[in-house]
Length: 181
Image (tube, rainbow, N blue to C red; front, side, top):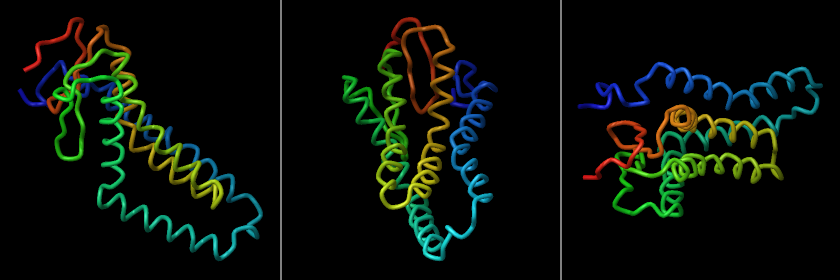
């Protein structure tokens, strides 16, 4: 049965798609809010150099997005968190640029899912000395890449069971650990 045909897959539910959209807009909200607020501030503090720094930074981040560097870092952080949570290496798999954990308890799965959110926070902290506004924009853009993880987190939290299986076939929650093939 494929991912899209399995009715038990949490990612096939309409609520999951709604949560993905909601978290996408919530992660972009701080940057959008600051963009609106800053448009009412005296434009004299917006100088020519700020504009070029902003464009160069966006161009570099665009290239990194295009070549999936951020996706690789994000998924690598999932793999690191899985290793730190003592998930056996045979349960950690990858397909394309995505990392999957065959089976783990909910508490470990929460850690594995939330760990990559430290990446946007670190980017923001690194950009504070240079230009905090650019750091805010970039951190929000990077956090928007975690909207599916946040939707998964909500769906798993709402589903009864103690074991989570996140595979290429979908996201499932079980009361007892399923047999691992």
